[in-house]
Length: 570
Image (cartoon, rainbow, N blue to C red; front, side, top):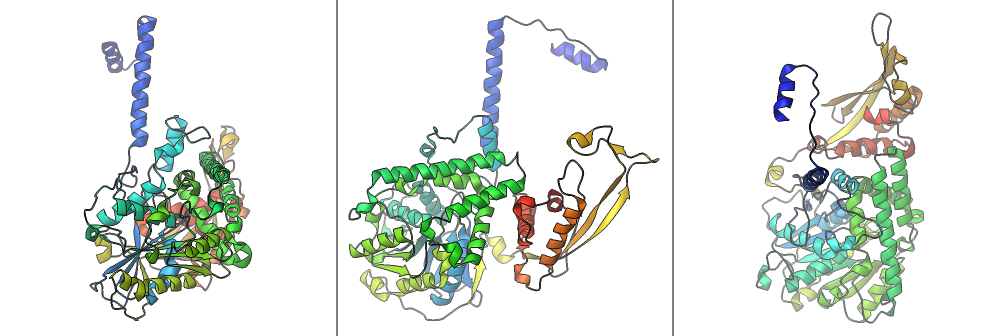
């Protein structure tokens, strides 16, 4: 066959090669081997990881990005002998602590190094599997995520897996050898409890330490838990309702499955329909009593939070859904509260958050925590609603010399204040040469119309669907040339918006209407409202450009369900 095929290629003529097929059983065996080899190859292909992806298991390291809150008026060489770690909640990222971090920098002594971190599956953390890889694996039935799948057994996003990932990344990627305090919000609080347990018991840690001096967390580490589930407190009858727990797990898993299903539809439906679904999902989630009517009390903060969550889900839906599936509160290790040092533990909840304020009062009454702080007129969204009050509670607890003296860790406290600057640089090169953010400036556009084809004949077969038939002739193209300048006027981008019949649903007039809305938004006097970006993020092809454009369109008042594809593309 090889010789006949080679001869055919060299002849340059059409050839027919007739092959005698071997017996059926041998033929079937060969095809089964071909199929098996193909499956092995594709499985390897869709499970391979790039520099932006990683395989997270219970003992695998993953480089989690951190954000450092520092004082720009203090020299970089100044000594910071204490470290405070801030951990965000579900659907959040390290920037969730920005408002609180700004207050902490002003109120804590300069010896404190204040950092926040992205949990696995959130923010800028490396992908476990990219959305495309996950889509391929599901389409090929290489894995499953449905009602009958025992997905939790994977352990990729369990509380312990994420806690170990945080510990390992802090020590191995960021050179942080010890933590003097950890503040965890909601899911972040549960992660903090697991970190505390794992470090104190050295359970399955990659690099177990032999003495307290070398441990990331010791009994002297202070824990601040904000609206976090501590596990099964024995004195609280409300926390041992097995049937209620089972219902919560089922509910969370159904929500996770709903998110996954919507992900697989994104390649088949318009982006506006997907964003509309995500808007409803997030609005329903934050409509729970836990949040204390946040939308009515703080409509602007609620709107901003909803937008941030939609952006997070559009970027990392699969992993965020997986976290929900594996980390439903009843699936927590039930005894993590036993490992805390009561004198070193602070619990915070909002007065409108009936569930966690109830837990806080009972835990304090039993002597399980040093203090319970209840934030008046606040629900579960503590970091969004009352950042100043949260900061005050943290500062008061961290400065309390009585706690430090009890454990022999008291140090002189400085009362100097500072202004905050967010330091997101995580490698030496960026620290020496930080890349500037580019702010989007004004936009201009003008219409154009050109003739296409030649000799009075247009171009046939241009368009989409029925419009691409040969009998349809296109003789002219019209649209708009747009230009967007940077805020300082030093850079200009040029694009084209040309709705094409059959491909785009919008008309030229509708496209012009949306362009006018964007132009009006970008011409506003308040430059802080205009978005900014890092060029390296846009060039990384990780979805940053799409998110930037989408944020501009939505901020311009354009409804997500009617975003014009030609405008977004231009």
